[in-house]
Length: 302
Image 1 (cartoon, rainbow, N blue to C red):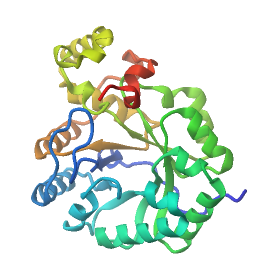
Image 2 (image 1 turned 180 degrees about the horizontal axis):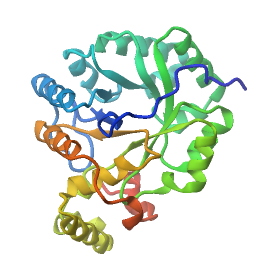
Image 3 (image 1 turned 90 degrees about the horizontal axis):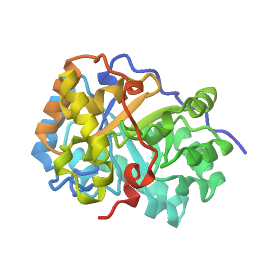
Image 4 (image 1 turned 120 degrees about the vertical axis):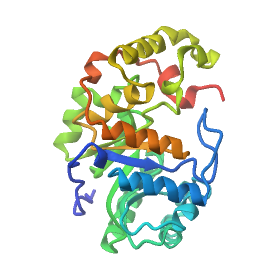
């Protein structure tokens, strides 16, 4: 089966700030277990202004994220890089529908091309790999996206995608708790194929930012792990936000990281954390978990 590696390969970031991709899943709708607010047009403009002044110039959105693309389209995106996703509903209806939806996304955003186009799930790609590869080839031939990737939930999905063709990147959950995609055996495989790692879910939908006495009852079996994080962060002189963010962002295998922002206070906290530079703490010094009932939000009670 043909490969689609002829496009632009993602370059290593020049700074810790350039690794950051602002996630917009909650712009225009509520997303996640702990997010109760959405982002309006004026707040979006302020967030982008603060982000840009702090050296963060990349965004991640999707047609499935409610009004997120429309809100972004009302902002000045001329100096920003954007990722969006292949709309799953359009994809289920056929490649031509997905192509029309992508064109519509570009019009809504007011841009001509993307830094990256991501399949919303491994299932979307693996349902018909040949169709997916042909679609990516068309998109690249028309200059609509420089790079492409697939969003996955576990390493086996990424390896199955790469059995057909190596994407430019995979988007995968990586956090203090969830290190499955940072296992040396997995990293060796993707690095050998030139596949980058784009981290998401760094805060586990906000769970890692909560005090141990504030976590929902379903997570009480792991309260000692949460308490350990809080104690370690205090000893390091770090906020929970810095403690959850910086060790992941600093990891050399993380090429980019999607960090959800839905309030001005969030981007201000992010900018402050990034401006402080790297910290003397690595993931090797922090306990993790392989319990999917904890690290996989699909298994959480809503």
